[in-house]
Length: 368
Ligand SMILES: Cc1cc2nc3c(=O)[nH]c(=O)nc-3n(C[C@H](O)[C@H](O)[C@H](O)COP(=O)(O)OP(=O)(O)OC[C@H]3O[C@@H](n4cnc5c(N)ncnc54)[C@H](O)[C@@H]3O)c2cc1C
Image 1 (tube, rainbow, N blue to C red):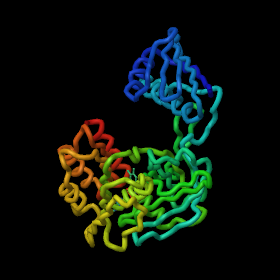
Image 2 (image 1 turned 30 degrees about the horizontal axis):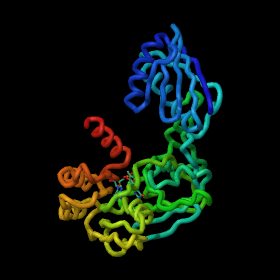
Image 3 (image 1 turned 90 degrees about the vertical axis):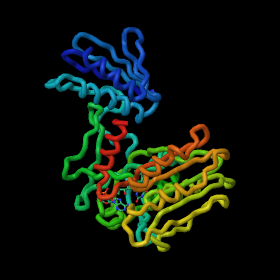
Image 4 (image 1 turned 135 degrees about the vertical axis):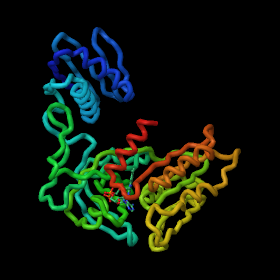
């Protein structure tokens, strides 16, 4: 077990402790009263918060540095959030994992090669250390930290001595974009990501277009829900979801059955996929129409035969926001809740950069 502790002096510690505990319960922490202290359990980490008239005494234990950082950050960020206006709590942790450090789920990767897969898909090969946590089919995507193109020495987010995340100054701050791990060999320290090259390129597409051996990016994660076992599979994706579908298809059991529908521009964008014999792949061509402008995936889903009786289906769909919205709405009446599973995700939104897209998704989720 790793251990760390801090004494946080506050004008009214109780007024901070109460909302902090209530808030962490909403984030799936378990909070109990033990021996006059509040004990917070979050995954495998445990924090004990003792109250005095002038301070919170906090001690944290966790089996690894990721758990320690996550608990320190959960406590420090909420102490800061719930301290009354004008009070700036001073937090300094003592013990294991103190001092500025890269976040435990963060890796710096170096580009080793670039391949053209199709005219609009580039594979970037990268090398990094300690990649084992990224090698799982249950969590496929990562947050990529892309430094500004003209920066000589990239700067990364760090965990400060107070346990909070410190971002590089705005001029050096990396842009964050989500991508899917297409290939990984953790033992060899290698990883491959497939990037769509699109018009109106943002930092992600522009990085893929200019990347060369020696360039560095940061990577955090992994995240998301990945492959589930099912009696039948239906995959619906545009080219941004293609890397995930391709990786899942490669990892399905040989006897898996189902269909994969993938929207791309034209035959030039089709890829050779390794697919179980029982999975039929259909490429949907939108031709010269702009990505996300034709309801090809929606119409395909609407036309799918979905018998009331029959095997349980795993539906996985990822595409532009309009397709996501329509498929999610249609799935409500089509899926059989007692039998089918699903993951339907908005991967990008026409005319909107990732920051705005994520902010809108968060606002919609909290309204829901
Ligand atoms: C979990 C997850 C996994 C993903 N995995 C992948 C992956 O493996 N490979 C991949 O290429 N993408 C993937 N995406 C989608 C990718 O994150 C977005 O396309 C992202 O917006 C690209 O960032 P950017 O900097 O290029 O463009 P942004 O700065 O985000 O946007 C700039 C402009 O480009 C437009 N735009 C964004 N993406 C596209 C597109 N694909 N086609 C046409 N116009 C677009 C936007 O609407 C906006 O107008 C994933 C998304 C999620 C949520």
